[in-house]
Image 1: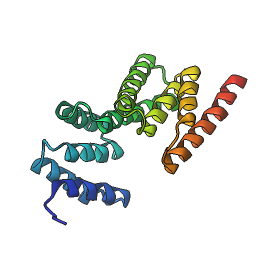
Image 2: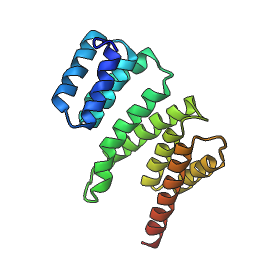
Image 3: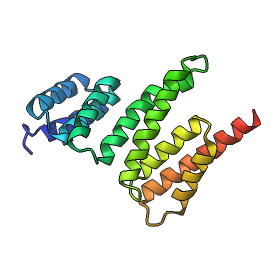
Length: 183
């Protein structure tokens, strides 16, 4: 392995982040972005690192930059959707949050980017569809979420990990939907 390879640097940074070695990981990400500011693989993994580290706005900025280079990247659209979802979740979890406009804007951003991701890879990007259905469910759009889950359950030839994720999400959806219907 070439230690000066910027793609390897950001991938290593993601691993270091998992082991809580944040300073070294952050240094690697900065170096990789300085060396290769226009390589989409570097940008996307640097953005993933930043999102996981809480720098969501910076992550969105990088991902949108990469999207200008490769506008048909399902991965980039999905990562942007995850950024908006990470901004949305605290508003959803805090019932006293009165910022309905911001919540609605974030839901729309999530739906746009998750929708675009699975539009670009309809038969293989199961996780993007699950994320889209989750946002629909959080927004009370149960029929839309049910439709997505129903279509996913009918898909054949799905990787076992994706199949497991589908069953888990469908189960959680049914559980939460029943709770909200009884309230």
